[in-house]
Amino acid sequence: MAESPLARSPLAQLAAADHSDAGLSMRELPFRGVIDLRLDQRDKGARDAAELALVVALPEAGLSVIGPAGNVLWLGPDEFLIVTEPEREIAVAASLLGALRGRRAAVIDISDSRTIIALSGIHARDVLAKGCGIDLHPRSFAPGQCAQSSLAKARVALYQLDDAPTYHIIVERSLAEYLWLWLADAAAEFRGSSFTTSAANPS
Image (cartoon, rainbow, N blue to C red):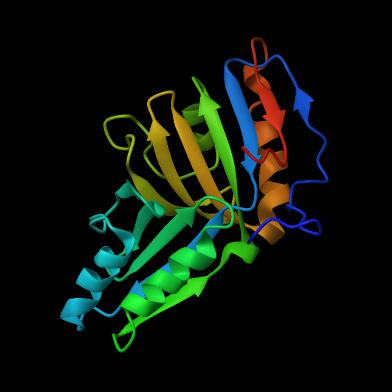
């Protein structure tokens, strides 16, 4: 969803706040583009065409990869999410549609129905573990990995960016405020050294 004078992120109503919590940072990444890409595995050339448009090899199971278009996440054998910078989603979707014309594929811009919460810090893994069934131990889930899961009963796509660790959580707009408040509450026990939250941070 391109940012405009009328655009409002789903977490904009939450005031930015600073707390003293153990090395945790939580912020919204509003207006990111999110494109759902479906490829019919019976069409042998569809994957090649998508990779040509994205200028990156599509990731294998459970992985994500960063390319010129943005971060590409594997969601299933025939499904990928492309997360772009604000206002890039229209151009990326158009490029994919052009490359996949006549192929067994679907390109759907779901940016308006999603937002992203970034959670980072030494206790980020502990906070997520309270409501997520994925094994987030570094031996099982490391930078570059992604998964679809339930987090506090909300359906999300989750991927890890670095060893801080930093996680990006893609969630539906209608559940964003609920999940934000749940995460803040789940982090409460770690208060004591530098937890910061910032809603609707465009950076």
